[in-house]
Image 1 (cartoon, one colour):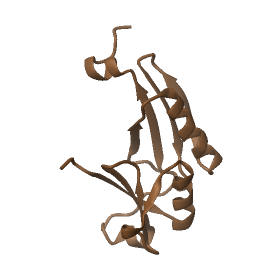
Image 2: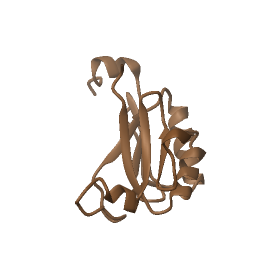
Image 3: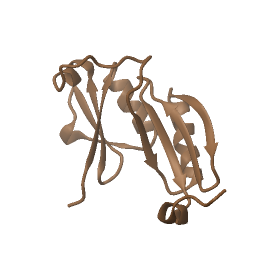
Image 4: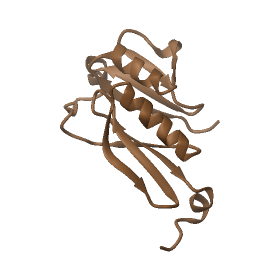
Amino acid sequence: MDTMVFINLPVDDLDRSVAFYQELGYSVNPAFTDETAASIVISDTIYLMLLTKPKFAEFTDKTIAGPDTIEVINSLSVPSKDEVHRIVDAAVLAGGDEDRPAMDLGFMYQRSFADPDGHRWEYVWMDPQAAEDGPHEQ
């Protein structure tokens, strides 16, 4: 069995957050969704768990980071630059904030956004040869 990744994020408004990620083209797994949490299916092995802040707090004794802080940048690869644009454009239309300019390094292209709760996402396309061999000398 492949390793599965579960990204757990605290959210202020669960319904708003679910709708946001559905606008990006992701689906909800109803078997792991209730009024305190929603399981968003990103791929066969990657899941986003959106948790109300009280539910998230059940899993930690630490203070939950606020919108003016950052602890993690979630980066996902996609198969093309067009898919980078599709997802980030959809995120902005759904209420996200494109918080940094696009970065084009030739062998790699990325754009990023913050979701309505301020969680940072980067979507990255990388030339398949560069992904295998490393970046070309500039």
